[in-house]
Amino acid sequence: HLAMECHQALTFAIVKLCTRLDFGPVRAEFSYYLLTLMCSAPLLAMRTSACENLTTVLTQGYDANVVGATFLKTPCLISFRQMVAGPLDELAIGTVRVMQALGQFGGYDCHVHLLPNLEGSMAALGDPN
Image (cartoon, rainbow, N blue to C red; front, side):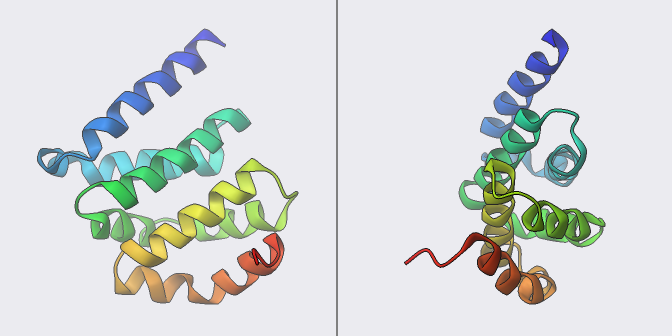
């Protein structure tokens, strides 16, 4: 359990660095790491934390299109669909937020890739109005 807490703390610290311009050389690798945690970490807390961190990287960092390009090279969309279709919990909500941030900041190709799934995601979560 201590190892998992250290893992989360380290990830959170790196997210702060990821929002800097000079983090560029490792942005794709760190984005892949966060996507992997989000889709397959052993603890729910780690997965939801990865959602929050990935949203931060996309919305507050530089070169969000690098994150989008990394996402397009992974099979994460299948996992995203499963997480959103599952129980309405923090993970489903975090996943939809990541999908929205990817659609908005991840570049045109990422936006187009996500379009068919955004309607289903919003339907799963209900109308926010």
